[in-house]
Figure 1 (cartoon, rainbow, N blue to C red):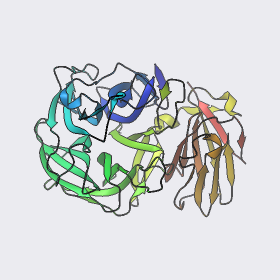
Figure 2: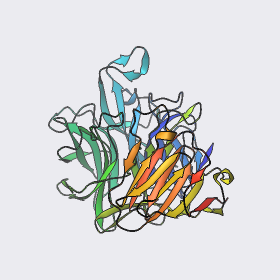
Figure 3: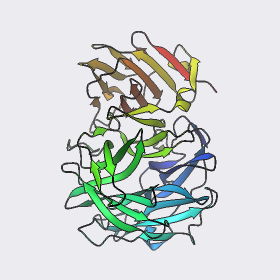
Figure 4: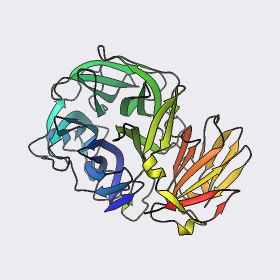
Length: 434
């Protein structure tokens, strides 16, 4: 099975992107996957490859539970290349108490989490029986972190060593844990970082540098406090990391990675041209087809300008939308792109998905294309827009991505039941040219 523009579940369930890397001339993107049903379950790693970040080919399942420390699931992680090999690091979980009615879930949050590694000579073949080993066992020291809620290793190469960041929690406060290794096998705990009033656990951390600035991205659980089912979002902030001490200073001026609040668990990678690129999972309350649930956003290039973090659609995606059309009914498999200028007081209705601009803020309302899910937030707003009026809106029948001023802010929402009618002023419409 193949996907264009956005990677989607081949069947069953997908959530977090994992192991995103450019390796031996191809982009490899793994993903949290329950292949048996369109619901969360005992996690495997699915696998897709691409030569351009927009045409994806699904491959065989890469990781699946085989060891005591991952018998209940292979949770999220990352990948690096070293001496020609692909090294994967991920969280394995072991349920202390399985749900007797569904052994793919645990009872009472009783499980342990460890960090494991596996390698591949070519990026495709993984020996799940003989090649897995634990690099960080479950954490027993509560002053450092939590034995169950510590997960999602992101590994990167520093100046003279390898570094790992893990999401964790201590004293009901989210935190990051930092480790160091010289050989990718033995890991030394260095330090932690945390902030007040930013959720009780920090998932899927990612640290990188771009445009001369350090950026930290993570998904804090219990962050929104709005009594909605999605109580966590992906956020990002400028940060400084000291390799000698493992200390990280995180700016108080954080921002949402996406103002639509559906995107979660983003992971970044450097493309073949040196751009920092991020992909994230769009949460969905129901399948988009009978046995498929889970979509990823368009790959986004991350830039830092004037201490603001921008996310613009990858040029390989932009370059595909060149065939001009007059109606959404003429769009191809990749959906369509809508481009327009929106000044204060103006509105647009895209098949029931409503956008408006008031007081230089963009508001999105998906209420009419999210029937039956009113318990989930439906109205979203950006901060004040400062850099112009231009919107590029990429529309899939189940995902809308609104890029404002080429990434000053982005607003992404999952939707169901879009019509083919567009109500707006002047706009241009494009679809994918294959």
